Structure formats: structure tokens, C-alpha cells
Image (cartoon, rainbow, N blue to C red):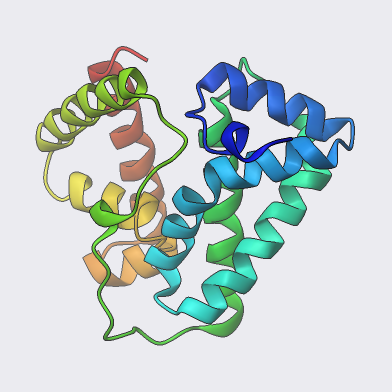
Length: 189
């Protein structure tokens, strides 16, 4: 595998193909998959942990899980990057719960982190989807929009949300469920 093939822009289809090769224990495909996605997944991990060295350790564990679970990936359920991002987010939340990490004073501008996994067409489509998502979030009843962002972007647990919004845990679960259903309807998913 030469250097130029590692720097190519990847599409959803090419990432799915790489994952299928990783499922067959193809180390070269795994290396290419890492090169194509590590910045994006690191951004997800770092955004929650806010600690560079710990984020790097967790990212290694994320890729180990991707290697081990690649055969479970299903293109009908999610895009490759969504599937990998979910693994990254879940593993990071496990780390937060395990260590009850303190907040960091360091702030990172994630818009400055390059995303090598998207072509210009993918990027345009993603930006349109993001605008639609933001409009749909703005249409939710207060405080559901804030709650969904805290749960799915910041990694807050349902218990943390219950305390923050001074609501019973069951109410939080219901609000999150209904909010996600409203978003799906709004986005025609």
C-alpha cells in the first residue's frame, strides 16, 4: 500500500469495504481505516474526556474494539463512520463513569480538526444534514433540545440529566425517547 492511497478521500462505500476487509483480519485495511477515521474519532473522544493522553489511550481501545467487532458491522443499520463513532462514544462514556473525570480547563476548537474521511460531496451533504438537524433541534420543546445535546454530544448519563433538570429518571428517559422520535420525524428518517 503506497502513501497516496492512505491520503485518498473515503466515501461511505469505501469505508464499508475497508470494514469488511478488517472483519477478515486484513491488517492493511485496518491501517487504512485508521488513517481515514482517527482524527474524527479522536475528536469525539477528546470532546468528552478533555484530556489528551487519556483520549489517546481510549482511542487505542476503540480501534481494538473496531478490529474485534468489524464482522458485526451492518451497512443496513448505520454508516461506517456512525458505527465507529458510536463505539468511540460508548467506550468514552464508560471511561468517564469508571473514573468520574473532572472537567478540564482546556478548550479545543473541533472545527479546526481536519476530517480526512469525507469527500467534498460528502461534506456538502453532511453540512445540509447538520443544518436540518439544527433546525429540527430548535423546533423541540424546551428543554428537550438541550437535553438531547447533553446526552448525545457531551455524553451526560440519564442520571446526570435527571439531576441537572431536576426531573425523575423516568421522565428524562421519556423526554429523550420522544425527542429522538420527533427528530427522526422532522428529518424524515
